[in-house]
Amino acid sequence: MKSAKTRLVSDLQSEIKKIREKGAQLDQMHVPENALDGHAFHTYALTSPDGSVSFEFQHNVCGRQIYAEGTVDAALFLAKQVHDKTEQRIFNMIDVLKAGAMR
Image 1 (cartoon, one colour):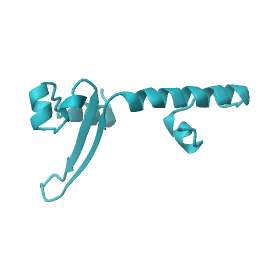
Image 2 (cartoon, rainbow, N blue to C red; image 1 turned 30 degrees about the vertical axis):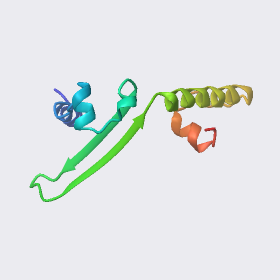
Image 3 (cartoon, helix red, strand yellow; image 1 turned 45 degrees about the horizontal axis):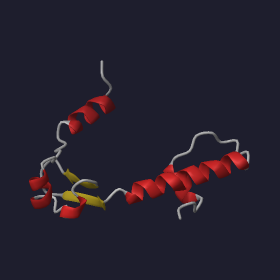
Image 4 (cartoon, helix red, strand yellow; image 1 turned 30 degrees about the horizontal axis):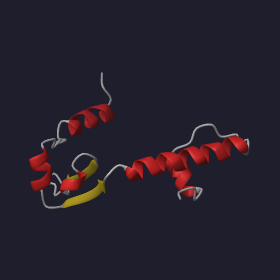
């Protein structure tokens, strides 16, 4: 039997709309034409069961440079952890941000 959390995630996944056609990305998501080959535009919408309250959160990334820079920052952060003989062995990007390791 699936847990309530697993059922909720499964139900939410069925509501995800993936817009892959470039024309729709331009017209509906307003992705700049020069970013069509490398972008991440996401909108999260929550609506109360009765529809009286809604909340939307959107984040947009144009290009791939920010991902490459984040990868380098994370590698430098990890190299420092190894050099400093840090006991912690599992890290995430929040750890990189908290350490002020972003260039």
